[in-house]
Length: 169
Image (cartoon, rainbow, N blue to C red):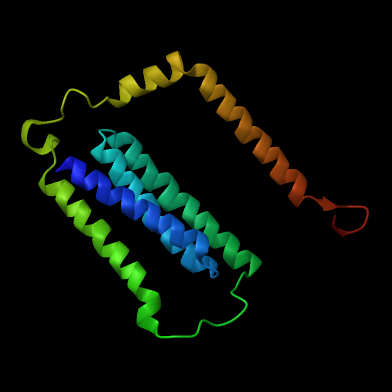
């Protein structure tokens, strides 16, 4: 059952990502990206990483998507032209993706390997995960932290105002 769910969720993630990239309306693209993130979270859960699945939902499908929506609203990004055509033809991919992700979620809940005998041995506890992350992969964590620092400095530089000219640079 896990193999079938893996392939279904992989197809959902790929389809949603493809639809995200091909949409002209930024709000529609974000909706498809959220579907892809939920499919990835369920994939992580099926693969035995419930902590990473929870982070995927909390950080990416939650916080990052809210940030993207805020940026779209702040920059007033809108499609250049109104979409022509029937409403159901635009809603059909969203409805199909949503129903498939919901069905996969219910299948995971119904056939969860940890639901009968408790958590299997191959699941890592948060303590083991933290120990591995900060002991064995400490260098990788530091490299990522420097990348985030560089991104923050770059964002500050791009968004700063020129005080001499009284406005944006």
